Amino acid sequence: MDGYQRLVVKALREVGEILPWDLETEIDQNHELIVLDIRESDEFEMMHIKGSIHVPRGVLEGACVWNYDDTIPVLAQARDQNIVVVCRSGNRSALAALTMQQMGFEHVRSLKLGIKGWNDNDLEMLNNQGDVVDINQIDEWLNRAVSEDKLKP
Image (tube, rainbow, N blue to C red; front, side, top):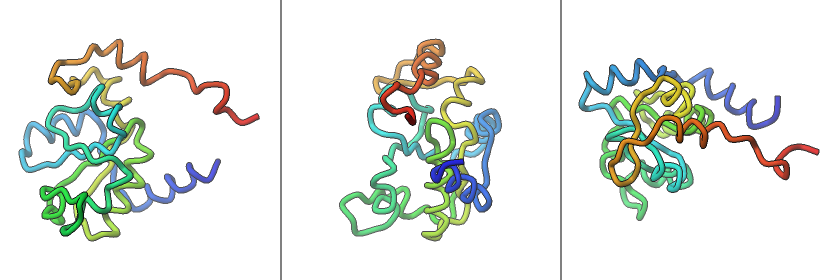
């Protein structure tokens, strides 16, 4: 197991997870729920869960507190709200949820399996124009192979 995976496993000892189909139900039942997508801008623009808030992982800490240029008021005032953090596969979101817990967020979880799991369960996603994205197109993009130059020699 590499260092990245060890960090994720360690984070998941402290961070709760929610499965995609359970998140779908919770979104329908809890209008106060914050779905926080921490993927990069191009990923979010291509596909995201309807109603989710986009805050790239790189600015998360500043977005969660007042008095910063990156502050997102809905997050800065949400220390006691239910928040589900979303990424592509559930790894970055676990690390981000742990960071948020360390910052005092009481009810933050990670979406197990991430956007990939959401799509695998045929749950709807939108692009930046608000159009429903074709599940097969998403599947092809999400499951593309890692390029050779990024593989360990």
